Length: 274
Image 1 (cartoon, rainbow, N blue to C red):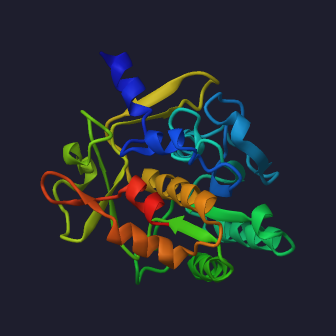
Image 2 (cartoon, one colour):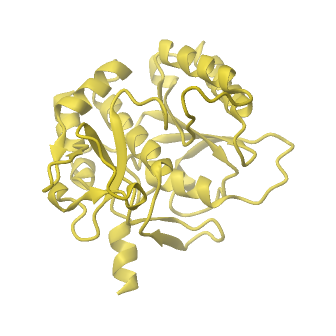
């Protein structure tokens, strides 16, 4: 039944809801999303928004993408970290590395005079680039990311892969890693050291009203970044002095596997190892 697919698609999977029952919800952790214009009033995430920043020159409607990544990171039903405080930085649609860099620099400035508890600790950016291919503003973006990482911010974006994260999903039991397969968009192209992050068969807040949801079988790497950012928030709730390199190393050491032997992110294993 379509309704069953929708409800099952809200589950972040891989035991994250068990972590929520244990009290790991991201409460007290500030996270940021840099993405397209957001519908602010959807029931899935409206209570999580602590600050919303939008330039005056965005003459666009709220986007599907903004509602999706917010849902997957901190949604009440769909989110990996349903009790974080969300700072959302909206930019025009399209690939503007300069605009994203400006938003990231604003986060760095925000943190300068804040205590550890008051800082934005995690940033999710669903954009990537190909090494060796130059784009306008890309150098600024890379410099801003490096500066943010040095300042202690966890920055998740599609290209900063210390590990070979890929998308994937399960259309049967989202909490059983054995049922997961690599993302549909990969068409079977998987490296030995790949680590699946849930992206397929997911539901998220509809950007057109305040109560509806959208279900999609096929997701892209855009959905992996908010998942990882939410997971980092759970870990920072447990240990607020955790750093980004250690988080990435623990993610690698605790990896689970699908029935085909492909690596898959292990939220419970990561949190318990912090």
